Length: 187
Image (cartoon, rainbow, N blue to C red):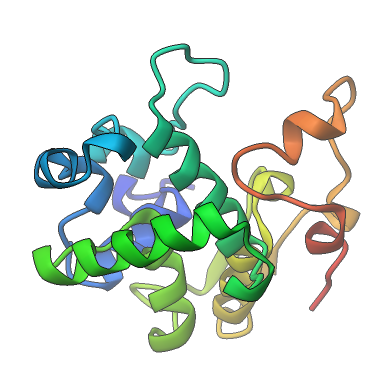
């Protein structure tokens, strides 16, 4: 059965389209880096990230700001409130939120968060939603996917969302903030 390429994509890509194609904060960090040189960020390639490519965990070129943003996104992905974040992450988050507000930007976590809050049905109101590699999703992403899945005629997610053989738990739980708790939730 032929499927149109615009009906296949990452959760972030579908959110980006659902929200009208906002400017992505991680791709627009020049002003941030001038303002906050102590927490510089490496600019992300928006399209690569929307297509599902993640920055390397072991990349020696990552800057202090990259590590703080990664930790912030991990907390947000696990849907943990600021009261449990490390103080340095809370400080970074306050500046990051103000920067995004001032520049009219959304970051990758905002895409998921906004859609979870404001977009009831997946873009195009699909009859079928197939969640491939769902074990790699964090709690916030799973919550959105399940919300959208309730509006589809068919919602297919791997049973039990078992971890792939040979992949260490720590690799799956990495930067995205995936946890065993999140992957054990069911509709």
